[in-house]
Image 1 (spheres, rainbow, N blue to C red):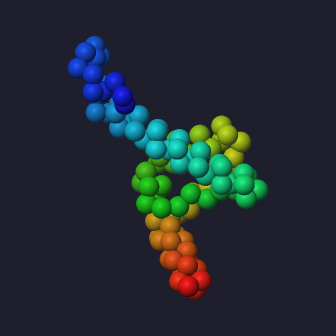
Image 2: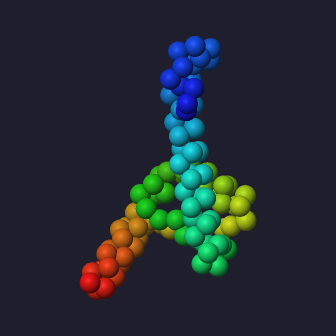
Length: 101
């Protein structure tokens, strides 16, 4: 993305190319973080991705995450109601913090 600000770029990128590159960048970073946490927890063979970003309609993100995670030796799972389950996970974390105070 650093060369986008350069006016001397001979081949301008289409909006589709930019969207694809941004999606790839976000999914790769998500997978790297998930891999590091999963290896630390000893569960690289079963990592669940939840949240609105990996909803059923966003199959491109799911495919990219699965491919990137597989290349690092992991197995990614996606749940049907991932946005709802992501909210439940956030609520559980917030309740744990509140109990600790």
